[in-house]
Length: 218
Image (cartoon, rainbow, N blue to C red; front, side, top):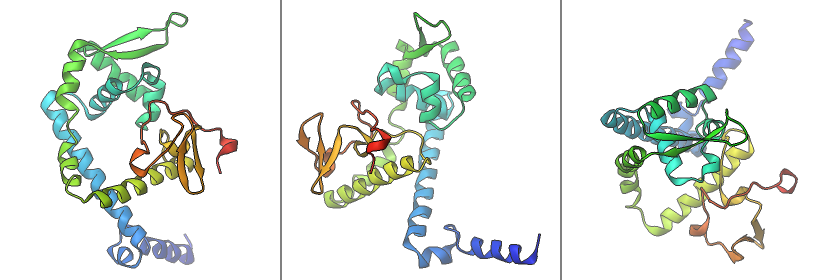
């Protein structure tokens, strides 16, 4: 590799968001580094819970998702997109959960290869044991003032939408990407509920979410 390319590469490394010197120069880099640390907390909490119940982290995530979402989203294809993993990874997780009697496959009447996933009674008991794995993180967030929480939530919800728009986050169900959402003179509005949305009304995971037509996205 030419010396010029090597030097250019080192110059780019110097501007890495993981370089503490760069973080001191650029608050965006510092925020990204902070988000990386928070993501580690989430993974640690999930792994700790997984070890106590004898399941893998992805199996726990699948069970919790099934417990709180409509059946049409509870299939291998969507779950793979939801958790940014391959279909074989989800299929393998489902096989284990099925073998343990934690889930039930509801096969399509028109296609014997297609099925959605439901919780068995054992599955519901497992969700009751595992759904609170992130509570230690929530308890720390609860200590912030309401105004700080509202500002943080607004930033997080807009960031999720932007990441999805740029193809970095595969799935999102925030108000900002929904066909029922519109902005009227800087006011957030839901045409389904026919009401103005305050900051705390914006949803990250709306049950009524319907994706906005790409042509209508500004």
